[in-house]
Image (cartoon, rainbow, N blue to C red):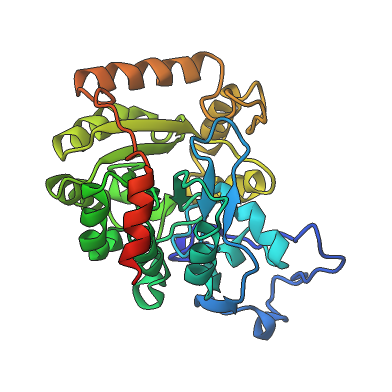
Length: 353
């Protein structure tokens, strides 16, 4: 497919019908009779007065107990993002809408403070970006994540973060203070070291070299940091595992984790279309490699298997990842959050006056 057919700067190339809508709008004539009605490709932001922010995560294989997301939808436009499906609950599409119609939960800091101020709250770690990146570009002006971190520091609330945006360095002052109290752990997502691949896969994210600089800077400041090599796409990015782990360790990462791509819900159709546009010569090969990791499907719902896959290719990925973690001395340093004591609670209460 020619370049003129590609929507530049976007991951998804289509807007699939929202399954919760009874009606849909489509183009029927290639001549472009309806072109005046076509939506702008510019990003728009929708303010929301959310009812809740912190949610319990019941899935046993995602590594978090609670998550909080100040934004719904993500400007980064990562084609594989599992959070795309949730955009349908907002009467939007999991395709282009997900990355160009961003919902901003303006009251997120207040909701966060109210939640952790409950007498029954036992201060379990809360994960930022469990759904969408809390440091996507709109955070630069809205500063919802920064305000949440300020509250977490004041209340001594343990936090974990995963991001692929260098904007996190803006908040290194708060993160350093949280690290001194053993209340923070950060993971930086690194999917590919290839700039050509990144531009297609994650069109509005920062480069891999910038992400490694983030790892390095956080590490220098004593902020515990690891990398999330996710998702690994067999036939496209799996060959980069050794290099990513080597570079991550060299820049100060302590831990590494991985996830094999899984295309749940409408993401399968969105991803398949993206493959045909960006990799027409390899589309079938990559698609079948993904299927081989999920017993002939492109997604698995089995806990313990859906993230790591099954079959020969997934076994090769697993063994390669483990070997190079071992070679680079990753995942050897234990981490635990500071224990909350009665004296800590009393000191926090006194600090409010």
